[in-house]
Image (cartoon, rainbow, N blue to C red; front, side, top):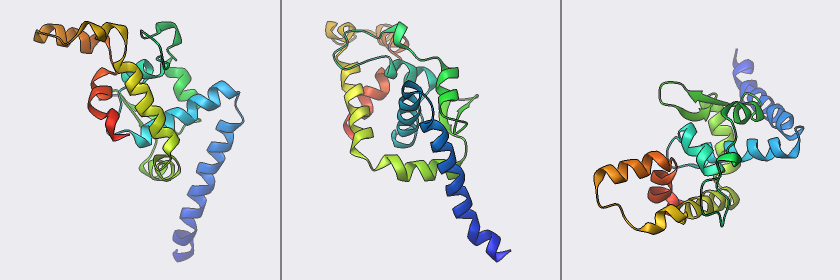
Length: 163
């Protein structure tokens, strides 16, 4: 029993590394999507909803609006991650399939400047969208409409500086 418990962390690391190898064996586009999504999941300040992330990923630096055609479908995001990522059906948020997977990938991504630079840069690009140049909302219903239209706005505004 003691040996089995001692070997368990190595077996888990091997399993996660095998999943990474499966991700890396995919075409470049899917590989990049998977690494980016996992990096965002383990590095964000709070769990991100599926609509927030699909909106965030649809904005490139310099874009003036969310490119609806550039949105990656949820099924594609999940498939690219080789079973490592799941969606909490009740909250609609992305997460790692297990806390041990979160811990493994948090150690791999969260400390890297690259992922935080990506989140901060995407957040700032989102905050510079043309629709926001009209100024602040003066009514609550206008703010609600803006937040409903721009799914990643709340996260970008509140957390860009943490990255």
